[in-house]
Image (cartoon, rainbow, N blue to C red; front, side, top):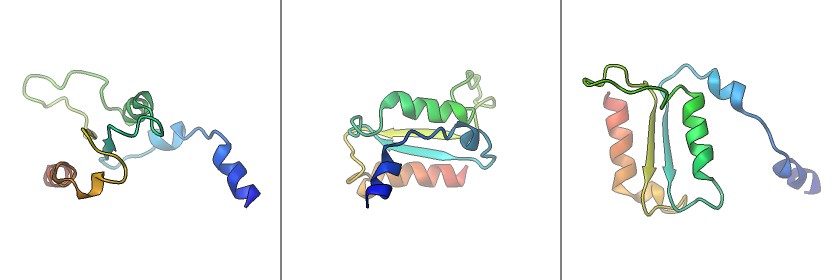
Length: 95
C-alpha cells in the first residue's frame, strides 16, 4: 500500500502523450472541483490538444476539432447525472 500511495504523490508529465492524441476529444469538467483539478490545468490540457489557440472565425470553420465543457455547479460526484453533460456528449458525437 505504501508503494501505491507513493506513486500517487509523484508528479508525472503527460504533455507528450496528450499532444499525440489524434482523435477528436471532448473534455468535460465540473467547475466545483477546483481543489482537485485546478482550472489552469484544464485549460493547459485543452491547449495541449490544440484547442483555444485561435479564433474559430465568423463561420466557425477554424474551430479546433476538440471540445471543452465546464459544467457549472457540478462536482465529479454529480456531473454524470446532469443533463448538461449528456447534452455536451450528444452534440460532440453528432458533429
